[in-house]
Length: 515
Image (cartoon, rainbow, N blue to C red; front, side, top):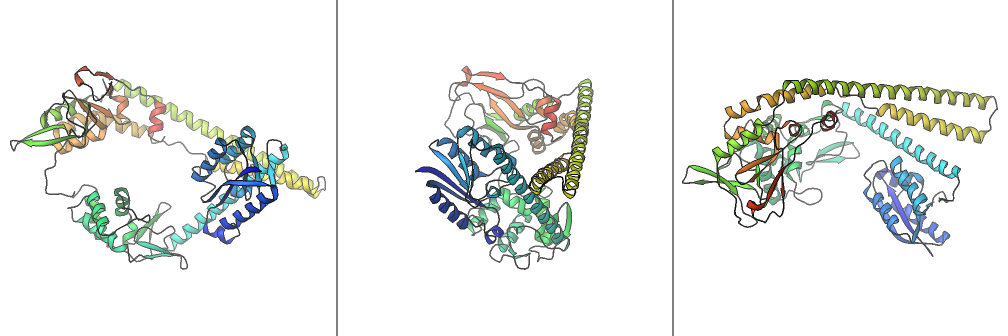
């Protein structure tokens, strides 16, 4: 008996009610396999959007089919349940053409394989295109509906932690189990005595859990503390709306917590904070570099030795570390003639990109007009009875789908981000004043500036070597990061240190800045 895979999918709860339920699809697939004499050796029953480019289950199924040449058949419900995007359609085509798979559709009782004719592949393309169009229209209708809800003050999405969705009234209501934890999080941060990590750990001990019954992590707490929905206001489509839901906290408490998060009233705890901790790692073992006080007055930085003690790691005074960090900051230098060249090159690059986009848009517009004229002529030919009904329907689908594709291409054509010169200018100005700002600052302020330009400072043989962040890595003079050759556990005196420099390019700058 020939072996087969069965893949059934829904993307929304509504589809469960429209006859597309997973159980219904599975039943049809099993009956189809029995009629065709196929043995199903593995099944996928998933709930995921067919529009997403990161379909985990679908990609797992594709990989599984490729790795098992003895499985020659894959059963879907209909093309719409298989995919609604071109990328996944290409993956299925690869299975057919290069891996010899036969694709079955149990609901329509159709199949397609490498021996199928061009008309069969054409009709599959049409079905996927129609599904794609339907998905786009559904998404657009949903967006319009969400915008209308927002205008009425109704929160138009999934309820955040502390609220639940009322599906009948289509609004959000207080979740009386979780809301007290949300209020407590704001109060703890607003007090100025708790970090977000401390809030996360404390609330977990008190019973606060995520929807997956796990600890609510720091990033989720951080997002929660920035969400204005908790004092009655929400943002949708770039606009702010006064919600009809019941606020969990006051605007005053929200603002107070936000001030603490933004550092205007940062939390303080009863312990000694050393300015340059969390900036450095040991070049020998990769452990953190920490600080301690000697003789109640001298601050020394050294490896934690968490992976075992080793030789060659010095104890450095805070003044010495501050000087090393200043040297790293001072390396960021951009001569005026280089600034002029870079600014000119960026302007030219943006102009070329803008011209390319305009040319592409004009070409798409001309092609759209051409396809529209073809469709108009086709309709005239039908009325004049110059074409039969079947040919008319086939060509009408072809033209309409091409028109839809062209319109989508026009809508998705991105405009040139013209903020590049301003970003570049600010980078030049910041690089110029960084050394002065550093010298004027106290150790804590110096640490912030050092952390601004580099993601890490590697300490080896009493020398700090920075791993510069972009775009500073492009402008740093001398070594920009260290590459330690050899085993980290070997004697540091015998290790070879090589410096790797970076080249600055306009395309790379545009990519990094999202231009």
